Image 1 (cartoon, rainbow, N blue to C red):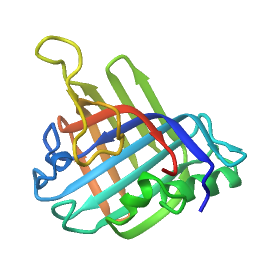
Image 2 (image 1 turned 45 degrees about the vertical axis):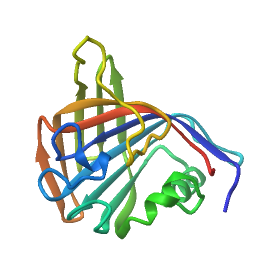
Image 3 (image 1 turned 135 degrees about the vertical axis):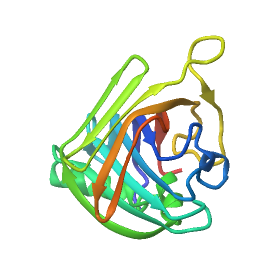
Image 4 (image 1 turned 180 degrees about the vertical axis):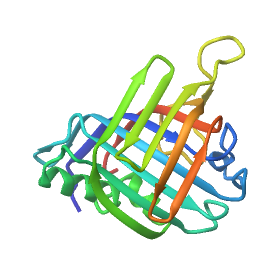
Length: 201
């Protein structure tokens, strides 16, 4: 296991649940299942001597029931701009083999449908975030304005892939995905974004 790596950047999430997603609070998903698209834009990253700055990663997970009680089917997407050594580093990190948060997440996974390199575009503008994963997935979310203005925030929910940071609660303007026998197309559903920092411990 590599002990010398760290990633810092922007985290993106949207799913088919109503906002805010009950899965974040260890509740059952709104529709009895959850299909979530997660994206990471790495502003600064290194794995041993390998630099990972500017790369994107996407993950789609389908849970057929309560996310803590059923195993997930997942697909991993790596930025096609990454070199072979960068792809290997990202695969180790996001499969959980390099430790850290994703090692814990791996315990929920029952099936890895696939992992491949595709063009991934991530954009952040004001209160909007969007991601495009090749020709299989695209999503755009916009932050929900709080009652006193500003962003609506969730601090420290039990299920959180951006630990230590407040999640900005958003709704999807679009969310579509079709690959590996998983398919979804919804709007006006849950979204989150936040900074993230991952490291082995």
